[in-house]
Length: 284
Image 1 (spheres, rainbow, N blue to C red):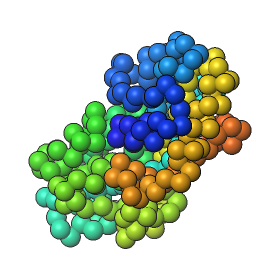
Image 2 (image 1 turned 90 degrees about the horizontal axis):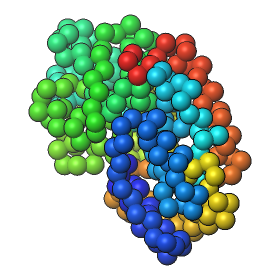
Image 3 (image 1 turned 120 degrees about the vertical axis):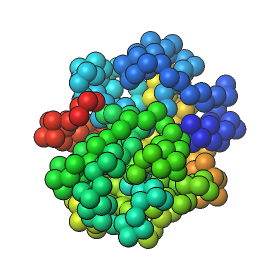
């Protein structure tokens, strides 16, 4: 996510002043992170770049539930691009494991390897893994990591058998040895077109789309909001995402205004219903 934010900030440079600087922040959980943005000055000097989960899934989960309302406590500025996640198995997993059903059968025979990695409990990959386990009646168990890089190290180090990671995590040379089994979403992903969707693999409903979002404090000045949207439109309109390494595994999809608010409402409602059905939380 940091690579993407830095690249977009660079693309914005000719179209927006003062220059935007992307910095990774670990503030102590979603409530504190959102609170920092909520208390930011309205001049656009501090903005939020995050995955969609922070504005659509996380607010539905205990202990965050009721802690913030993205449509009231923040000013959504734009959805920038779409991305997805992929279930991978490590090189040390039996070479005969080529499908999701193969993996689940292998885990049954190798229960000591039932753990799969996700970036943080309560994340969309965690939710997708929980759905897979429930739909398949499988005993796979999530393990929370701080980053995809940490997951990749354990996969390559043979201390983790599987993970649900962003497709972008496959970009490095060592990660190319990982075996992708299925992608989250309704369609195959263009950078790994030979990998089926979960639905094609026999498991429906794992069809969430990931996307990157910018937001500011609730009182963000309208003039600043307008300039940011105009700058993003100019910066991303003609950008060849496939030709930029930091953007190669995402699909440009700029959404602003009423269409963005509707996307937030629709996805929030979907996650509210799904998390209740699954009894899903940050500790599930």
